[in-house]
Length: 301
Image (cartoon, rainbow, N blue to C red; front, side, top):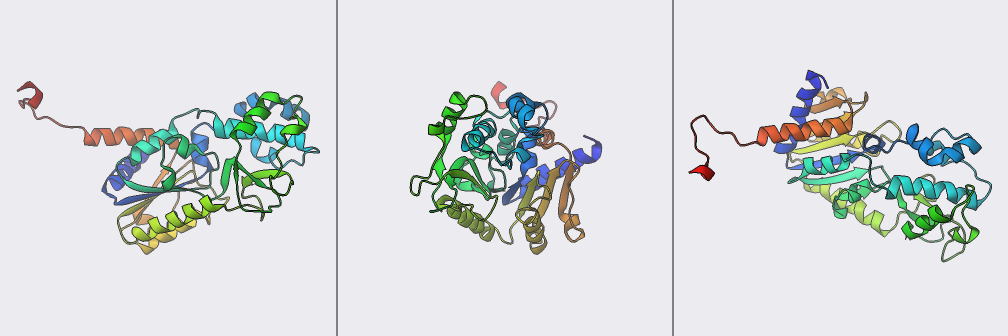
């Protein structure tokens, strides 16, 4: 990173250090920085047969393909879930973010559905997954508003699938109405907001209200233009309404802020993983103990 970016990273470290609280908003760019890319080599490694048969170009668009059978659909989706929700992250990006927030009062609002925050050790009560979770299924109708953990079922699908199909007996059906299950992802009006979703939504609002008017950093990481109304625009508005707030954005070629809050904004155009690494290094340097020449360290007295 160039000198300007290093200066912005130093500002970010100082702002977090001085803040009463940090409100994190995370988009898909954060997971991409952690190695969860949806195209290229990683997609080719795990989905070569689907790519050859269906001509898929990436995991995201493949998720909308109208498979002819549920056996084919769940063969694809079980792999999609497994390699994005249950396998270990390629990089420790989320761990670095947690280190940067250590000792601060923080909350996380995210549109990501890969559960990476909890897997990195973030407390569940400080997270709000607005768009669902790859690890949950729901009734496709839906006939009720409960969700269901899918780890064991997906593990069996991964183990027993053959020729891009899962055995018919593994196709998940709603335990109440018998209709097929679907992913708990906000793709249309059938998305289920279960009890856990509503509890997290209340905790998010409580956090904002508790820190209204305080020194708070709205830290936006990897948020694009797909759903700006969930994180980006609210963060801009909250910063504008609170003269003590700071807006910080880390993104690849997409870090920007409106003129109204530009003087209270920290904009870092670059790789999130690298930025977090440098931020931790900068914090370590500024917090390292110093000894004047001639001083005797207490341990040696």
